[in-house]
Picture (cartoon, helix red, strand yellow):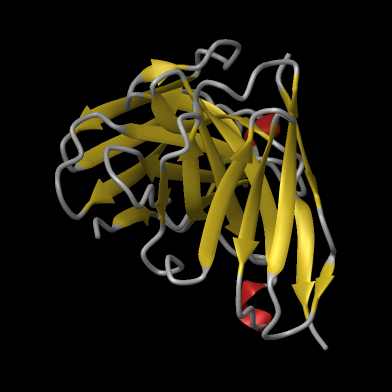
Length: 107
Length: 118
């Protein structure tokens, strides 16, 4: 099975900072990668699919990039409402494995 | 707007079978991938499996021997059965809908906590 490794597992940044989260696949998955945001106590929410396509309604400060094995989620200017855990998920083939998550906090 | 709602027992006895149903409203179940995903308390997300509207299924190999997902198009529902449960199966269980032609999750249910305990 393809493993999905996210880094860092947690980070603390100031409001307005640029934040980058990395997701690495153990084998190539082309661009079959999605990113989700899960706020504390809430249901996950789709942010990005096809590695870089922003889901409708998601603020433009979120962006995704990458293909093959290395992917990034970037928040261009961190806002207080972005406090959450972020997960990547591969969906090129089963199992549709999630990364371990990255917890984002405000410094 | 598509809505999904999980239902089923919140407490299951060890070695028994966990059974959950997801009722879909605001759209037909006769399209898309329909997923089950779980999240143990304080931990990350684990994909359990999905059923395509045609009835074909795929499961996480780590759970495959214990999982069955089925669909009832007449009721706009799909279901999860997980047999021989242990405390490690305690989690919030989410049902979720994929996107057109792809299995990433576009819509999530609210989730239901299932505790395995005697």
